[in-house]
Length: 523
Image 1 (tube, rainbow, N blue to C red):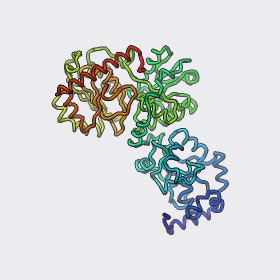
Image 2: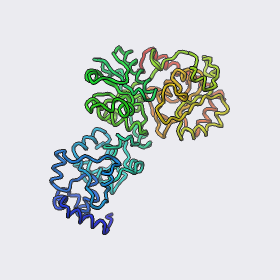
Image 3: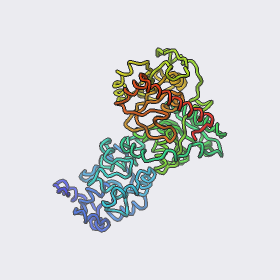
Image 4: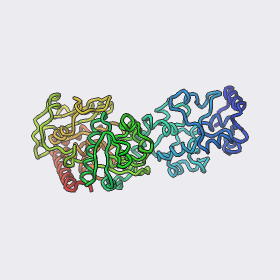
């Protein structure tokens, strides 16, 4: 349907034609879809062409091909606000330059094969599918570039992006700004289609030819420092030279393998923000974040620069590999000498000073453990609501629940922080470990479910998770819905059949741990 022009549109077209910056004859001859649209060349340019970066003259096209077109303005700046699609007398959006096309390609989010499978019969520019996608926005704002990015979701979530196409905003500004990019339903669907058993374990692809420096921001989340230390230890167990640090000299950057843990911290707030593009492109990035978060968007913006990524979640690593990145999976395990290996020991003074703790006596039988249920996780609205719903059931049992809120990175020594050593002691004295997802994605929280749960013989009761290819639901952990979680807890603790299930899963976890610790690997 063509929306009739009003007086404001007519005035804008007249202003455009009088400016000398637009050639209607050249524009109509260059883009055959102009005639098909039923719009005049000027009206088509103002409504559609400039929104997708089409030049208005042959000279502008030559500037585009030479890469000399002006870059897009900063998101939210006065310049970008001056380029809203219906602003009278304002400059058109910049053209789709070779640099912009390259930036789109690096994200690997525009999937031509997927796009054709979804919209093939409706494509108007089969010779240039990116232009076809971008030009469809006015008529079909729900059309997507691939299986992960949702055009409509991004536009609705970020209503300050002005007249810039949502996907171009993500590519050129959104990742750098940490904008939420992927809706939960898209992530779940994409993860359901990957095979985590096919992604290589990091040990199988780690470079052994020179020193590996594992970097993390010294003022960031303590957990990332632990992962950096673990990564170095993991490589050392393979006979490689590796060190965990908080910075590295320019000379060492040239001659060392570099792994950056949590790039959303190190490269945004830490020393990495001063690195050259060439050094950022040489690094391998270790992702710790769930895909629906702003932290993942920031991390992803650096991953696409080098194309090399390690993930602590096998499904996430497989998803990154499916997109086309050089991805591997590094399992967090209680390796000897690592920060996740803790013998039976007293709880720390910092924990016992702030909490009334039960006596821990490490019984052999799972049904004799002093805590019935434990939950440890950063609180948010979703988790708070879930825990409130479980309260009538949990109040009947001996529970350890720790759900603090954090507005800044979690630092060692924070009274609301529980370290891995204390977590291991509590888990070894708990029958059930609850897992409530922080969002609507089915992310497998490896650190909680494996390090604190399966490896400690504490039976995990969780919402549905993406498969890992390693541990199986019903065998090593139990899945249920939030609505049925309370009933399952009561069944496991109060019935003979439930206690038998606890014992069976506990034994499976014991065997899995022994096998892993003997081999030092998941395979």
